[in-house]
Length: 623
Image (cartoon, rainbow, N blue to C red):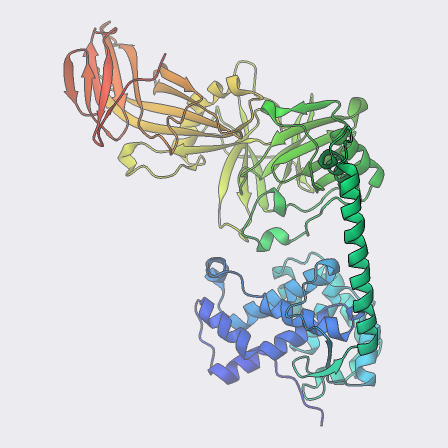
């Protein structure tokens, strides 16, 4: 009788006893991987393309399984709602094997074996029949066949597993896998017999020794010849030429790299399994990603340096290496191409003869790389959202009590968003939520201030909420009320390359008439590192000073002091002063006032300073 393969669940139950319900940890998953290693390698081997050949395929299968576990911190996050270690590690192996099968040029064969060829024990005709039929199937279909035939999952459970792995065409994969059995694969017993077909039990054979020695001599001759030619060219090019050799080499290299064929592309699901969630994780999207003519036009526009607009002084120099393609398609009646070169975003639009906009995006993250303005027409601005954005809504920052409105959103592109009203009676902002694959229930706000990347809005609550820490997302009721009061001040920063803006309520003060006021510092940071800070007292809206090119109100300078003149309902004018948490004494003229806030009648022109509990003094922001 043919030996039957144990499933992962059976092997885990055999090794560890009855499964216990509840959460699992990294140690459980590692144990499941080690206990089920041969079965996992079998799954990966059957999913990978037969065209690789048995040697490369078995090495690739081992590599897939050995890379199945991410770093411990990410693994703990992924296991938060998992209860079955074997099921979890199986999904990871299947998901990575399918991804590697689609991106065959990126297969990493580890460990490498030099001078030897590795072959699993053969099932003879059965193996050949399986490879011939499965070679014409998609990786998803091979994964489906392996889960049903090897792991003995029913069709419904298999479809659920495929969808949990992020495969959009699970139904088609199941249908395609069913056709495999109709094409005589059902009778191929070799792959199902662990004693006959085991990718972990391999046979070693040497490569062609004579051919290998001949190739080694040929490679040595070629390398020597190339080195000699390079040395000769180097001597010739440095012998008094008008153009330095380095410049000539750079120009030649730049022209060869800025071609449609050299453009880099990221896999569709790479963002799910990376520690760098920014523009480098964006896949290439759009209906014209394979349009070489359009891509060449966009790259030439960047290389030529004509009709280029730089956001806030961004360098317009063409990239030294081939850029990454983010989008190529038609939006609002024009062809649009988005590139990313590691530190800048470039948007090419073929309207009006072709225009290119370049903006800085270095040090972007999950929020500041969440959207790009892909089209800016009189109807409004459309945004292309990151692949990790799960939901998109529209808020009016001037109406904090209004719920989030629906915004058309298809293929990652939003409907047009109108600019703020001229009288600032309304101010639109996108409320985005990240996929649970990278951050659970993480909602955040961004708003458009020109350029390409919208501004990330955050909020830091008043001292009464506890110790000042890092800014929070501006989605709470208090944060929305705060931004409804300060957002109009962002109009002066239009097209200034603003990356993020934060409202910090650094002090609260009881006023002489018994009411309370909040001192708010609005801090805006640019991609270039410069910053703007302005302070106001609310609800009166009185200005408390401002500063430019400063670190005040940022995490690098959390000591701030502001003053303003305030008139009470009885007509008395007061000098109000307020400092941040570390201010323990105020000096107003010759008068010393303990604490961080003070209200002194008259004395509007008095000099004010604040003493810090950490030592030293600070002065108020300039008006």
